Length: 370
Image (cartoon, rainbow, N blue to C red; front, side, top):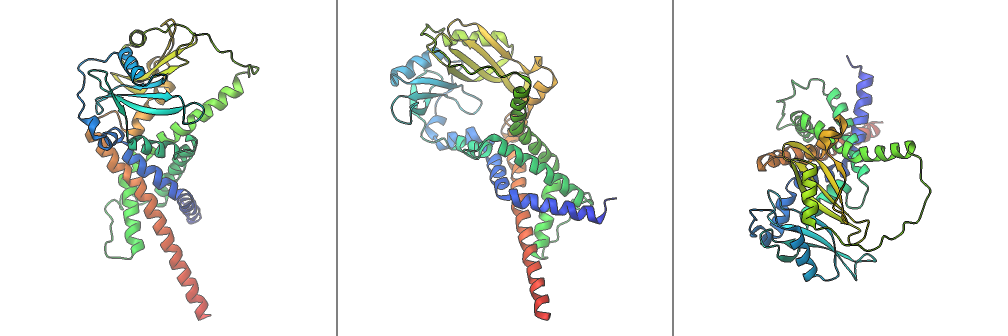
């Protein structure tokens, strides 16, 4: 049985962990609950895109590139996003010369999937705005959100031990009592009923934010550092057709469903085209195939099914965290449960502030009597 001293210590840890991270936790959890509808929000913010027809067969990537270059001469294509279950059109990110800094201005274009016609720039990117807020807090590194996941795990663990009578409190709600008691009952109920989901979100968020940091640190310690050299600019070269590169990527990984295509150093001998997406028969969403832009040969393949347990485990974290592996019903479930951590952060702060106010009132009364 847990001693009273241990319970007091855990209560202090629980309270201060919640107070210190409360505001950021609320922002991250609230935006995370909403961002499950990222694609739907983007269509809502750009209603003209929702009316575009969906192609019955994959559109030609080379035709898309030709039409984009015809519409924006001199622009460099960086990324192509393929249609998904929600969005019927392609999105192409181009870098226009002149304006927007030394590298030029980055513009997001919508392209019809049936005719490959360029619709034009996307006016609103509200969905991506919310995702950046959730994942990076706009401009911060992702490990900050990873530490918030660790803090959430600490809050869950300490709260579980503090409320030892967890089963008896499943249906406890003392309406009509003091504000602090009502909020405390709501706080415990939200934490208990959403416990499994909170553990999933906290652990996967901590993993996604911190695992890359530890991986880079391990590589830095294990692999010897190479002497710094100035890379030479590769000469210009003829590029392979993008449709041919896509066919090579599909052959390399059976069941591969590309979602994003990234062009690097395009037009040069060292050019690469990277395909990223998921698998038709697997939950993992971290498949990557890299194809040489000049020769069309497959340079590297990341198939989590062939990389062992940890690769598959890592590939499961993002879909489990964002809930984008199911239909609309699963998204609504993630949204409803995702709101509960935000409520816990808010209610916990209000309980702490009300308790502090009451302690001050008691101390003031003792001073008056003295």
